[in-house]
Image (tube, rainbow, N blue to C red; front, top):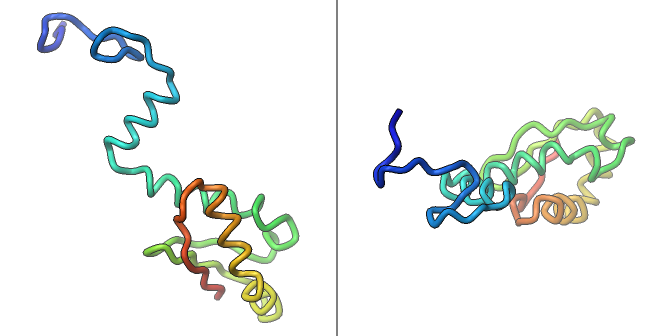
Length: 110
């Protein structure tokens, strides 16, 4: 079994100096190192849609994707599209607060 460069095996959950690291902190560092934090925040914005907009709106909408900070949402009727367009900034603010970062800059209702 390989023991690594220094001849000793590093335990999971320990820093290089041997100190234990909290799982959450280790995951954050790993996500940052991989450069996928923005993608995960966008995913969080998509999956939190029902919580952010509420049950009634979630029933008539379906968030489809995020492209360059633009959230594309399918809406079941023109009247709902109109209503949601008026509430666009409020929804963007709530989604970004939930994601913890400004991942959504615009919403397009289709």
